[in-house]
Amino acid sequence: MRTLVLTKYHALSMWNWRSMYLGRLIEPIAYFAFLAPGIAGMSGGPLDGYMAFVLSGMACLLAFRAATNTLADVANDRKWGVFAIYHMQGGGPVGYLVSLMAVSVALFTVQLVTLMLLAVLIGGSGTLTTVTALWLLLGGGLVTAGWVGLGALVGSRLNSYAQRDLLITVTTLPVVLSAPLFYPLESVPGYLQAVAAANPLTYQVAWLRLDGWGPWAALAACAAWVLVCGAVAVTSLRTAEKITREP
Image (cartoon, rainbow, N blue to C red):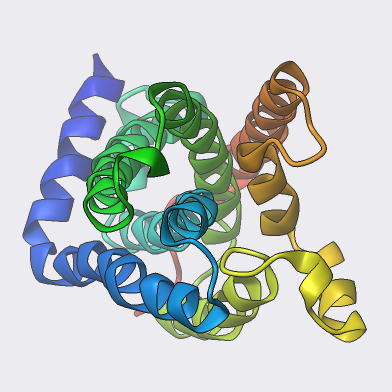
């Protein structure tokens, strides 16, 4: 019951910060509606094939955004006493993390379905099959939940908004741009391939594209990602200071 109440709180928090979340909703749509078709036209390849290629990349981008959103949410909860109050009422780190995952996966689903509709409108009906759509929702949802765990892990150790904002600023663009979300990895210079090899998004987009992975192997990899990130997040939340020292 406490987890459900906290889930409702986190959902209402999104509404309170709706102007910020509106920007986060528009950003991936702009990428997909303007950047992706432009790159497809420049490459000269078929539009439907490239839009299908980018759709899985955008699913990974949305999943990664869940980490930065969660990092900010955990920092806010610790600063304003929400995490402490939940703990004093008998709530545990597992329930807290589940509430974050539930809201983030719901937001991911809404965003991805919107992009799927755009993909069909822009690229045509051959861009997306029902099986592919279901796999992206399932696999992408698991990847999102894992990134939420990682965001909660980092957020539980930060003690100021300045640390949070610096970390988000420094990591977001390198992580997103070095992963093969908009381009095939074999087409880029060697140094970028080396950077991509250290980027989790590189492997996650391969899972969602089933690139070198069978369906069951990719599903197992997504599930393992959730379990590992969730376990380390719960461990960190259990020992984290309930309220930050930031004035």
